[in-house]
Length: 564
Image (tube, rainbow, N blue to C red; front, side, top):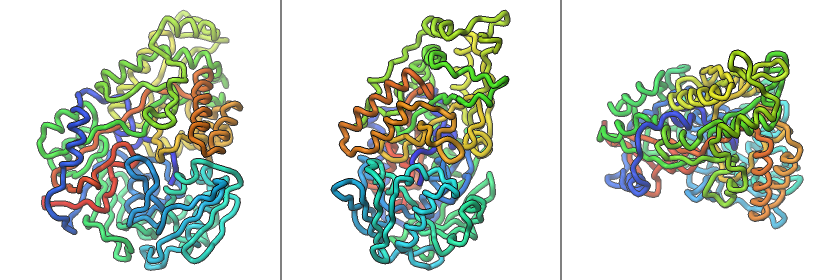
């Protein structure tokens, strides 16, 4: 339900820059793989699909999901209001709760949602307008602490028009709202209305399969932490019955183990094949690979809360220092050597080849260590006797965190460390289990710098919750405590107009501002190779879509399996 998820959950998928040791096939070949893969044969309603993952979920309560693996699992058990087509436009599918396209008033402030009258929860109760109203009220309640609050805090009123129709009025124009609304996975009012808002995150719902009532094609049956999750077809499902009877999320300790399982046929799906194993996987003969850039970008995020550093001295406080780090890093070499060219260097959080592509308006920080050294001197850094830069008696040392078990990210971290060390900046690398990292470090903003990626879960460019000072931890995604009054106003301005050209001009200003005062060092946009065993079938219209968040599961409701 949350628009921006940390793409740091599945080894290669989350860590963009580290693994690419093998070249990819041409885009034309990739397209043919997608469309030719499984158009023959007739759908069979049986079998178990095994999904391999390197990371466990954190919760299956949609109110609190912030990571890609949890989001993927949630799409199996909860029905969204709407879907996105391959071009990123809103659409209504048979498995969506919406009965008709979203209605938006002329002034852009009122949205009307009409629900299917036959939708049911897994306990047999009907899904109604009351559930949708309850869900949105929950999301916007600050006591609940949902990361999606930032997307629903503009809601002025909610009106129940009838049992299956809700009218939502905003207090102002908010251009991304339709895309955010599409992702909403309603929660059952009859199950959760008695849970105090401040206790919802600790409730059994979303943590205990037996206590989690859902409304999607499959229901959650079992969870063995850091081992596996099981889902089976919901007997009370109201939509077209999925062909696949059971889905198992199996968690592996290492990338090598997961890749070998895929090639052996123990796993039917791996949404994040390591780049350095891609050639081997393709040669196995029984795995179809889809490789295409996706909606993720990799970055180094800085922390601007000085209490996270010894002596309350934040070495990143001066923007000139952060600009110098840009020039130190050879990002083109990362794309070429690690991703084998299947990626693009970016200098802002705005993806290329989209209607809002404004990266050319940002400073193009080309690799230039000599310039980096000049900027560091201008920022007051001097080389100490031990070869480490110093300023006001403080050495330039910091800890760079990233998620453990991700070969590609680990390689990138090592490259960052090596290149920064060459100019006198000492980096300590620390790999942390993802679920622990989210809880202990990311959500509360307790780190010095982190290596991570954001996945843009909808096609809209709004990222106010990531970069605005209105959304500091623990309720927002601005986990590095970045504060820039100018861009705070620009994010708001971009959201308060529906004209795309006007919005694009605003995002161009943000791109320029982020060059002068970088919240992150933006590294590159990337995608992750997705592998499917030959027993997984889909028709061309239902092929996975790498361009979309959770596109590895695109139209899974229509997939089927052949016998092992």
